[in-house]
Amino acid sequence: MNAASGSDFATPRMDAVRAARPLAGRRILIIVENLPLPFDRRVWHECRTLTAAGAEVSVICPTGKGYEAEYEFLDGVHIHRHPLPLDAKGAAGYLLEYGAALWHEMRLALKVARTRGFDTIQGCNPPDLIFLVAWPFKLFGRKRYIFDHHDINPELYEAKFGRRGFFWKLMVLFERLNFRTADVVISTNRSYREIAMTRGGKAGEDIFVVRSGPDLTRLTRMAPDPKWRNGRKHLVGYVGVMGDQEGLDLLLQSARDLVFDRGYDAQFVLVGGGPALDDLERLAADLGLQKHVTFTGRAPDADLFSVLSSSDVCVNPDRVNPMNDKSTMNKILEYMAFAKPIVQFDVTEGRYSAENASLYARANDTGHMAELIAGLLDDPARRAEMGRIGRARVETELSWDHQVDTLIAAYTRVAEK
Image (cartoon, rainbow, N blue to C red; front, side, top):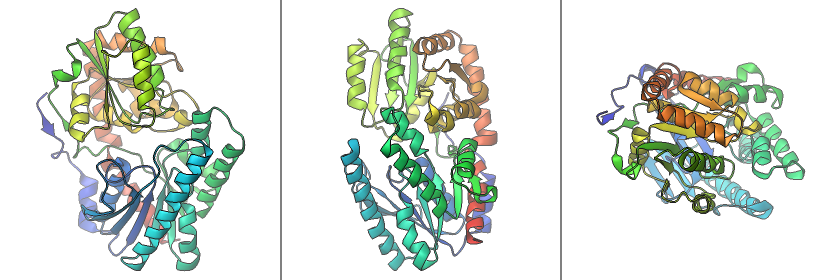
């Protein structure tokens, strides 16, 4: 493959929005707590779409590595960043993080209200607390609130801590209040739409499914770079957050099986940062995988694109649990955009996204995952066909351009409320 930009990929819906400017005169405030912009790809795609449609967009988000500026005007978007305590753990840690975030979000929302103003707030969870910022503006300023539902937090809490109890019940309460406050809900998939209707009590006409499709104009498929292989025959790639709930311990167990039990000359390259990175590096060492696993940490796009372009197989080791079963993982769509065959555990939304571009291991069965990876490493023709299927599905159904009309429809609907 020659290095090639996606800039020549057709975007008819985005082009139509730029021409028609259906949101001209609208002023929008987006609040996101867990990632800085423009690093949060989904929210950045939303921002760029809304500005293309004629809206003035302001964003409140945390700072992060490489995104330390308190204010930045980028691609027509006003970005206001604030500090947050890092890597919160335990009840006290989360209380500190969420309390600090809400204080900064309210402070900056008032600043935006005094300067540019806004008619609509879009709150992106986690956590399900941004409705607390929206409430006074709805009550006294007649502003509208859109809940952009990224994560199902009761299930996320249970997946992280393995229990329910008081804090789980609190997550359920916050989710209910968030839905109740929202005039319109943006769901990331059909499972989340069902939750908005059942647990959230929202009417179907007020729920819009906007998937986290990749922007094919901004992805660059590159020539494979042999440096990632570390001199080995095969390369298995992973892109995502290094967190406790991402199942990366299962992936490392599968890597041990593939390399030592099955004898495959394979290098695993894991791209991403997160609170579990140090623990995962120690686990890899305990399993004797130091020379077979590369942890890049958070990497620039050039490295991410290079790893994906160079991989023979890409993997998603998310555990089978209620959280992961109902959630769409961005990494799956990115793998498909790079025409890579996938191995993942069998979850509802993962299967919906990838269809025949993926093989599906039995629930949390690391040996079966290793077996499926091995089968693909031995079958280049099948890898190529699965990659072709995945890329075609992204181009024809799942890329960001296919989400544009629904996002605009959500903002058209909220103006009618």
